[in-house]
Length: 216
Image (tube, rainbow, N blue to C red; front, side):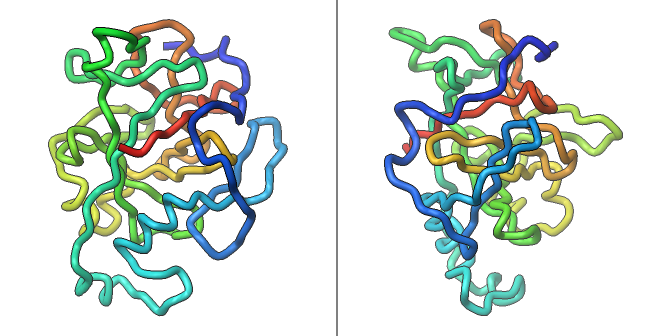
């Protein structure tokens, strides 16, 4: 699937957070347009809450060992749309992006996320899946990424170390939209194709898709 014709993403839209601030002490990402221009880090308040639910406050002394004793939180769930308002649905075991209006809205597949506690918290590393967190989205372990769904739970992956890296994406927040970079394949981002019904894939800049997230 080719992404060459997609223009650089736009950091605007009706979803996302109406107010945001800059900080260097919370889960956040550096929004890049793929042209070498990097914006200031931006807090994603929802991600601050997610990481605190699983790992405690960012400025507290939390180790992987101490995190084991915390009561396990539950994944956060989101409806994810690209800037053309295409949503995700399952087709033949693959996630595809299409228009999900009217009767098709029931087919929309929300994503679920939990933190990856073994990677740098400031980069907002998220283990991503669907079906309430019972299936995980993997980039594979080969020399080239192969995006696929696997029957492994997000909470199981949360307990693992480097094994969770192929399922992890660094999420950046630009104030209204989000991008997802594969932790195992730096420079490759979750992206949709211009046409309808094509598979979600991993693309390099400038063919990077920005997404709106709506908490369920």
